[in-house]
Length: 305
Image (cartoon, rainbow, N blue to C red; front, top):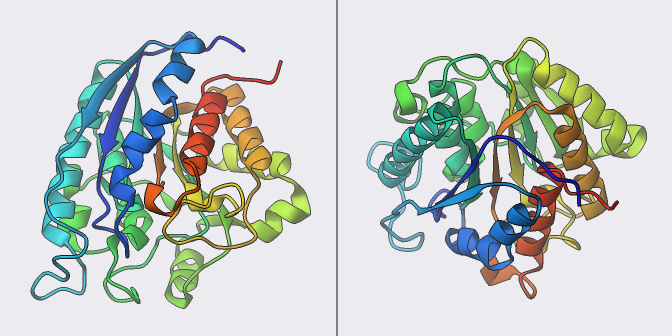
């Protein structure tokens, strides 16, 4: 294994599944820990501090929409993401690499708000079967995990876009989506309007993951102070990651995804990362959590030889 020196890693668990359409992702952080993420990183020579989990109140199945909004569980999602943005801002100010374990993808709102608090301009690589750029006007479900990238770009409910101070949003020209294969009609219009670069799974098949990552890194890193990696495990094919709430057939293989992480690692531009949507209630012998640990290992320098 290749040693990966550098900043201390602060692991922050966010057991939130209120942004998703079904419960279960809230126990994702502990599933990833159980799969050995701390031990894997320590074997690579990393100094790891597990900060534990944020507190999440409420149940995915007991409450739905807030008054006067289509968005489900808005109050608690705002509260958790505000706390998360503060934790990440503190970690980065201390010179640490924040590694966030989800939880559903609505936590990216707080993650990216916290990264922005550190100052500078950052790029974003978003691995996902979905593009998550719905807003209250376009959402077919009201689930906030399908809106998180739109919020990070500055669009959506003001209570969400104001998290972390509501300034210095991620710029569309520094944003890249990789692996998308399920995009709502309103999202297509949004992405075209903003000019966000989307490498669909067809692009991966046509170009190969190495070429896609070369282009993605060039877009996200050009003129920025580093990149944030937001990886939804449903970006992988359900064969390799069955334990996700919204699986979509025909995704990235685990080996393709590992190569993508290796190329980000070799570029040396990642300043923070999150791995989300592991749902152990839908998994097979913790297979998806183990895939997440493999991907994290590759991101931090693990190689075959």
